[in-house]
Amino acid sequence: MTAATARPPTAMKRLAGVLSFVCLVLFLLAIEQKHTVAAVDAVRAEAGPAARRVADWAAGLSSGAADGFGELRSKVARQAASWRAAPPAAPVHDGVAADGTRSAPGVAPPAAGSLALVGAELRFGTGESIRTRPLRIARGRDSFAPGQTFAARLSAPADAQVELREVVAPARGQPVPPLTLCGGEPAGVAALLYRPDRTELMLFRTGTVGPDTPPAALCGVWSFPVR
Image (cartoon, rainbow, N blue to C red):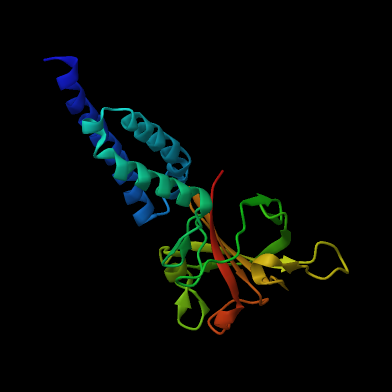
């Protein structure tokens, strides 16, 4: 077999590899599950240049072997342009955004960035912080609004311990500052559920939380990885 006759099969094998790679990228973009979003972001940064290099290589083949590559090259160019023009947004699936935050179905709560518990303070990656003091321990089965329990909202066991903290002023004589995570209003109560790998946080605008708390008192629900 001569080099001239061996070259087209080799080219087709390389084309098959490229198409498999592109299909994988498109599959990940389609499902956009929260555990694959980080991988998709990395693929978006690298897939376009890599695919374009292969298409450029294909364009250098003989006219007979390269006839099928023209359409591939134009598709690669269009897809790469769309990746550059539209940075990925944080998708929301059943109330869970890509960064782990939760809200009402289809609505993402304000981004909190990260959470650090330093003494009585809850410090967020946004630069905001709230000072708290112990209030009481609730159970997962307990209600935080009419017909709504911590267990159902946090996907936790009925006997899970939820730590309720009262939000207090940073210093005597000062008011409780407004909080972006509560829509610019002061937070009244923070509810914390500790898991081995995550900390779940619920913020309320009211000073008490129970079966009669209005549903609108809930600012949002966030889930932070334990660092």
